[in-house]
Structures are given as C-alpha cells and as structure tokens.
Length: 178
Image (cartoon, rainbow, N blue to C red; front, top):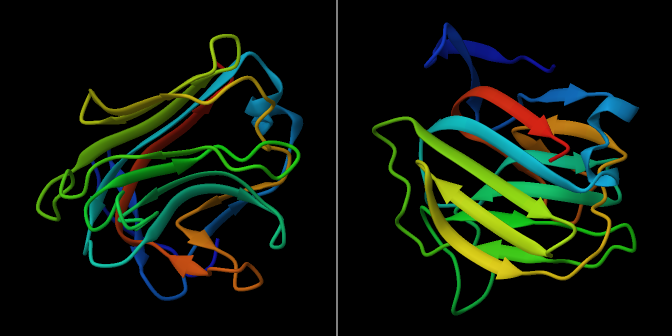
C-alpha cells in the first residue's frame, strides 16, 4: 500500500483513494490467478469522488504487461463508454483484448455502487454488472485470462501506457475463479 487512507465503508472501513498517488498492491500468487480456472469474477463496492476521467478499480499488472482490468468512466471508443460507465478488459495470456463497456451515466458520485465483471470460459460469456443488474453482455470466445501478475487496487502503474489512480472509496473487493 502507498499512503492509502480509510473512510466509512459499507462494512466497517473502506479504502480511500486520493486520485493522485495512493494505491494497494497485492503480490502475485497462485490463489489470485483466477484466470487459470473455468471462469472469473471480480467485484467491489465503490463510491467515486468524480467521474470525469477514466479510473482503475482492479487490475492485474506487472507494470509493463496489463492483465484483466475493471475500470470506470473509460471512453473505450467514439461509440462506447464515457463518464459514469463500467468497463472491463479481459486481457488474454497472449495480450489480446476483450472489452466489455456499459453505457455512460450508470454511476453517480453520491452513493455506493456495486460493480462486477464475470467471464465464463466454457460459454465465452462476459458480463458487466452495476448495482446487481447486467449493464453489458458479450460472447468473448474461449481463452485464458491473464491474471498471473500483481493485483492492483485503485491504480495502474506509471510504467504502463496509460497510468491512472482511482479517486473515491472502495470496499469489499473480491476475486473468484468462477
């Protein structure tokens, strides 16, 4: 962790990210390599401080090679995403991208939101959720997601192509191999 603060969460305290420099790094381990199984789920509760720029929530990265990602307010393309969206990129072991992008304006700054991404390797189905509802679904095909590196909460390292830090509260982060 790097200067992480705490605020009132849904359950006890939540991580409080300043949008500038604080972060949580969880070293790579076999138990966090959720992409090696039949599927994966990444979920957390967030209360964003702002939604004007793309912000990372959860991401696998070694600083040079990005893995599976869950972000908010990602302007993925001219026709998809933007402020207040939920975004996931399920990067495969070969570096290929498999994006899931909700419509913008789903998230607000005045309350906690539950966000999640799931991927089922057998069916190839990827789903994005916000507050319990599916906000985007796509058949991504069958591949192995890249989840072998460090698990980063609230930031993408400066060595990456697009460094960023989350701004707001984050609580109850979970990753599952199903």
